[in-house]
Image (cartoon, rainbow, N blue to C red):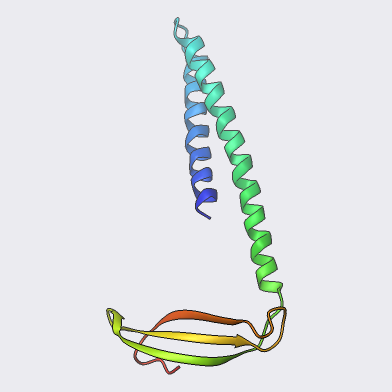
Length: 123
């Protein structure tokens, strides 16, 4: 996600700078016009290439999100839930929860996660 965001921002910035330098180079009639035109062309092409990469990363991210959403669901049972009174984040209470998968592709596998829960939420 960060790579997609950074690539998109760089594509936008380099594309805009490339178009600006290209316009200045084409409209200026002095000796520096060739340098502005060349720099603008390089920046515009770089921006277009980064935009293509950003679009490809976005499509890949959307496809991964679809696979996660449409993927199989598993049933699990809570094996252990331990309250950790010494670890608090503001008002949030910390619990360590261990789950065991009952079906799906990870049958019998146990997973332990740490959760931050508001005091008003029942577990």
